[in-house]
Image (cartoon, rainbow, N blue to C red; front, side, top):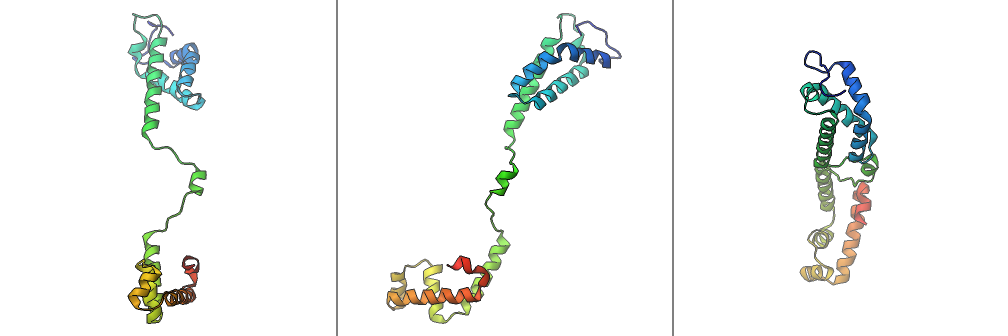
Length: 181
C-alpha cells in the first residue's frame, strides 16, 4: 500500500490492511525481532499492534508528502518495542516453579505462638532447679560459668541439670524433639 491509496469511511479497508501487511510485514517483523532479542512471539505481537495502530490512524497512511508508509510503520513498531521493553523492566521478574520449590518455607506467627505456649507449659512441669538452669542458660543466654555464679552451684551441676531438663522436655514435647537437640 502506498501513500494516497483510497480509504473507505475513514478507516483502512480490510483488503488494504492485508496489502499493507504483505508489502511491509516482513521488514517490520525483522526489525521488531531484533528489538525483541529474538523472541518471535513478542515480535509477532508487536507487528500486530503496529498494524492495529495503522488501522486506527488511517490519516497517517494517506499522507501525500511521502512515497511509502514503511517509515511510519517502522517508527510506530520501534516505539511499541521500546514501550514493551520498559514495561517488562518496570515489572518484577516472573518466578518459575523451580524457584518456588527451592524457596525456604517460613512458618507463620500462629504456629510460632502455639509452639511458645507449648514450651511454656512444658517448662512449668520441670523441677524448680532444672527450670532455673534452663531459663538462665537457654532463655536468657547466660554461659555455664555465669549461671553457676548466679545460682551458687558448680559449673558441672549446671551442665547436668541442663542436660536432664532438656531430656525431660523431649519427653513432654515429642513433636519438638528435633528442635531441642
